[in-house]
Length: 240
Ligand SMILES: [Zn+2]
Image (cartoon, rainbow, N blue to C red; front, side):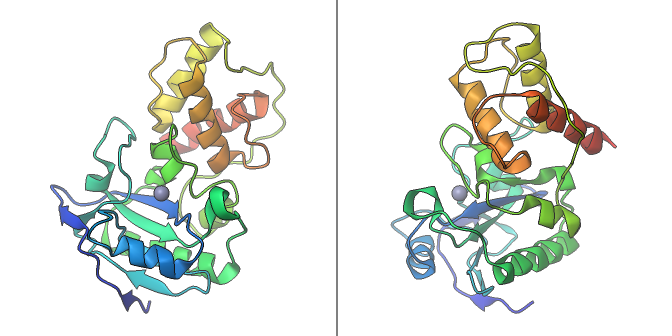
């Protein structure tokens, strides 16, 4: 695909090839402002790509280098997420400045770019995630409007549609074996959710991140029956 060269100085060396893709939204009023910031040496942030709402794709850092997009993060036992991932910034004002649907042309470009990246590097479906998935305590992007289902239908990432799943909701303050099992499941998927059996604020933040990705119609941090059924179905799919 055609990419526009917009080099950023904000990257360093990788120690291993990337095997993960992290999706972001820019969270700024305009794409121009975001691009300027991602290229500003003072800002010390970047990504490998930025995708505009009209589908234009900017290349900011070489894929073989370690761009600075994830910050303090965790997935599947690893904390240096910049070191093992490729970061894609998707232009959207975000929750702070007027979160809005991602246009078709933009998502088509994200899908094409993802396919090309996966042609160059080995990236499993279970390792295509959002910034909120790897930093649930401080990030919400790309958020519950990002069409993960459409990406999965195009062959990228995990998606499930389990049937109805009644069951008592687990919420902040709950304790016990059910909470322990939930945390163990979230950990197995990749989240930083060491099982304690206590549904604390950190657990609620992780459940919200999970819902922004995999149960988008209601993001409330409560692990209801549907949320838990989706987690179980995803774990089956990831293990298959
Ligand atoms: Zn981000």
